[in-house]
Length: 132
Image (cartoon, rainbow, N blue to C red; front, top):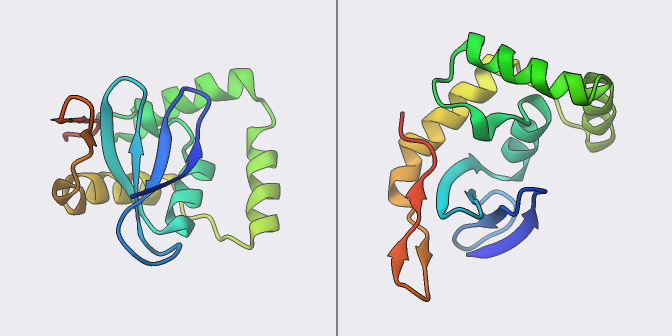
């Protein structure tokens, strides 16, 4: 496992296994939770650009996501413009939000069941962040 990025809340993104940017990506928060969130860097970037509030999604419904998006837009009213500029600079196509969140749920609950992060000093597993 190779850590390659962090977030403002103290979480870390890790590449799992051997290879390059196509490897599965696991996210571990600072509270002892972890989840596989993407298969490859491109999928992770799409998730972060389309639904930066993904950590707060628990039900994966359009209503829940709309509420979370509204909260983000209060603090960052130009979020969509920034997202579009970043996607263009990276040459990324951005799928619809429902597709991105559905993929997150699928990766975390199906492929992710085979990925467990162990907190080495205590030899205890991180708790699953996504259990739906």
